[in-house]
Every structure is written in C-alpha cells, then in structure tokens.
Image 1 (cartoon, rainbow, N blue to C red):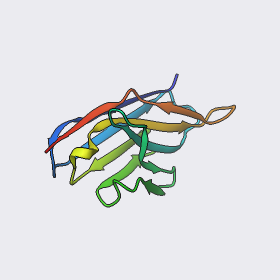
Image 2 (image 1 turned 60 degrees about the horizontal axis):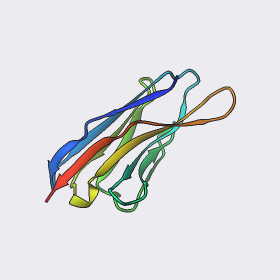
Image 3 (image 1 turned 180 degrees about the vertical axis):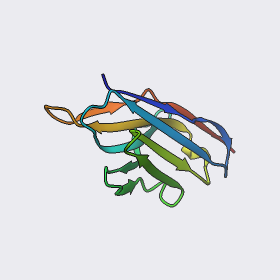
Image 4 (image 1 turned 135 degrees about the vertical axis):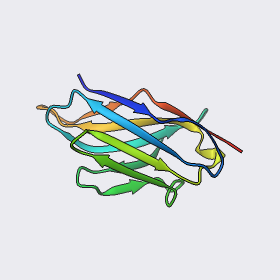
Amino acid sequence: QVQLVESGGGLVQAGGSLRLSCAASGIIFGINDMGWYRQAPGKQRELAATISRGGSTNYGDSVKGRFTISRDNAKNMVYLQMTSLKPEDTAVYYCNAQVVTRIAPLSSWGQGTQVIVSS
C-alpha cells in the first residue's frame, strides 16, 4: 500500500525558511510526477510546486523565486525548500505523488504538514 509521510512543517517568522520532506513507501513500479500543494483556511488547495521524474519543475505564481522543489528518486522522496516566507504562505502543505501501477497512475496524497508564518 502506498503511503506518503510529510515532515518539516512548523512555526516560523516572516522572512524565515523551512524545508519540507515527503517520504513515499510501498512503491513498486516507480513514481512519475511528485509535488507539493497547499491549502489555507477557507481557501481551495493550490499548487506550490511539482517536479517530474527527470527533474523538470513547475511552480505556482505565488511561490516562484522563493521555493525550490527537489527529489531523490532512489529514496522516493521529495523536498520543498521554502525561503523568504510570508504570512500568506501559512497553510497545510500536502505531498502528492503520481505512482505507477500495473493498471494506471495512482494519485496519492500525504496527510499534510502545517506551516505557520508569523508577521
């Protein structure tokens, strides 16, 4: 069974940095895209960043230039380095993985990790 576990969230002052990690387990055939999404209270979940198996990246407009996504294919892990954090970055951050299966790609989600940026 595929499981994603995030870590690294917490409370940080504006202008600070945090690094989120996500570990995927139960992977048999590999993972295509991996990514981070976030959801602030009362708002829809939105894209933070995605990264392909080959390392191509895509960022949401609100985090471009401040966040960096990376992955370790051998360890089935994805990371999100967040710098110059703003109060509006406060949200629950969710890890996503497009897991390869015999039938079709399976979109798997972690349970989320809370990031709070104080002003």
